[in-house]
Length: 455
Image (cartoon, rainbow, N blue to C red; front, top):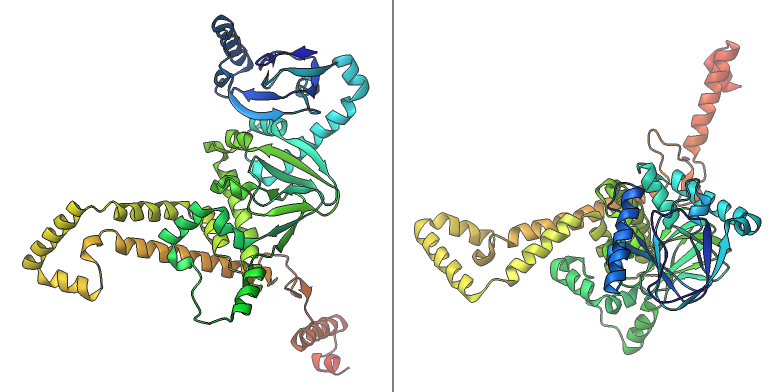
């Protein structure tokens, strides 16, 4: 089947009895999500297409939000064959002259039914069992299942590369992937965010230790600073690319490569925005941020052990942990920058008036070293920045304590696990176990504790 550009192959809300495979060309997928039911969606799409026929121009924005683009070798339209109601869940429009292979229901049942249904079942099971989607309504879970695209990657295949444009989020379904990052490149990779960090949180920047290095030492430090380091290994249910989407980065922070054959579920950024940027999904976003922050605590800890500057990672963690404080710091910094010459003279006039009326206030401000021109913004800004940095350090300390394997009440963490390795039993542990055993045996035999311990 050959079709021209801007031809609507599938209409959302219609019944479907076939799927399509792209032999040549490209198609875009759109979803209407502000209608109550399939009938309203179908009526809306029909009106859009009727208008396009009259105007001889298709307004794609009226077909809903763009969520995916399919290229050569990919299939679309299979969801209607898998679902019992056979209703199309999206509209599909060709982006250029496209050649398609049509697979009707009879051929579908004979050839690819088992494969596609097994894949759909895997995606459904993933969404149902993942804590991120536990509170979602069935309709939202169904939309998430349909939005996910399964891909199989072999050993050495890159999931994402550092510096590559952010287009998708990846959920690890099974397998393993290695994460490496060149942190020294983040300053040039994200100049706008680095400049923002310098303006509103200068205390986060590394301090100059005053050491004078030789030219050779300087060259060696520069070479090692740009060396990619392994950050962690990711397993099932881990997420790749989510930090970039949440924080708003245009390129990937790190390189992730599968270390053995792995299955990943791909969610486009458009689908993420459609499904996660809702009030009903706010809790899922918070859970995702918390999960990512725990991973970044590990990144920061490993970087500190390797004497690598983790300033940028710390700032991204703060942006995920405390969005409101970052907004407050930006606002107050902008207010200081907007302080004009007229404002200066006005503030100076007010200061002189205060000086005449109440010397004690001025004296107190001088003692506290508060700049009278910015006394309404400087002190709160300092308080906010200190609070942000203190909170980050406190949470890092909590993470380090948990990672040591120290058992807490109500948890099942082993007492003898420390830094991921079995800890040797101390003499107090052994003596405590002996005393416990002796006491129990004495009670069972009815003999005295003294005799049991002696024996």
